[in-house]
Every structure is written in C-alpha cells, then in structure tokens.
Image 1 (tube, rainbow, N blue to C red):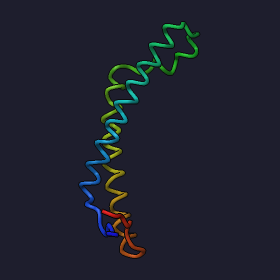
Image 2 (cartoon, helix red, strand yellow):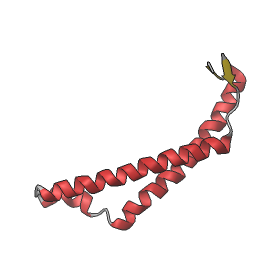
Image 3 (cartoon, rainbow, N blue to C red):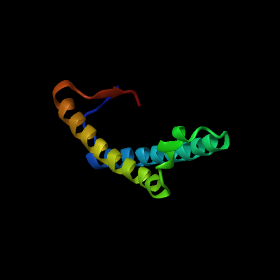
Image 4 (cartoon, helix red, strand yellow):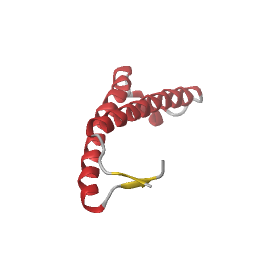
Length: 95
C-alpha cells in the first residue's frame, strides 16, 4: 500500500471549487424546477414567498458563491490534512 503524505493545497482547492460550482448549478436547477412545479399546482402564495424572492440575479450568484466556498474549503482541508499527516500518518491506498 502507498501512503498519501501530502496534498497539493491549490490543486485540492481547484478540484473542490469545481465540485462546489457544479453543486451550485444543480441547486439552481432544482430551485427553478421546484418553483415552476409550485406555480403550476397553484400553491397558496404564502408558500411561495421564499421562492418569489429568489430573483434571476441571485440564482446566478449561487454557483459563484459555491465556487468561492469550495476553493476556500479545499485549501483549508488540504492544509489541515498535511499538518495531521505529519503526526499521525496519511491515508493508505492500494494502487
């Protein structure tokens, strides 16, 4: 078995950013679909107040916000992994 002793901080940040961005796009699609379903079945307007406030601009910002969060989270996780791997060892994988 091989041991992952160190992670590339920026490389994990970029991968996490891409994954979070895709999750943000999926969230926007889900919100749009649910909003259309709610309108088509004529739910009472009290149920739609939260969805009505989500404008197109805000929906477009969700994937960008997710990208930023993913990048920062990836960097933090990689830095913590590298620190902990020095003391307790890294993850062992079989290649």
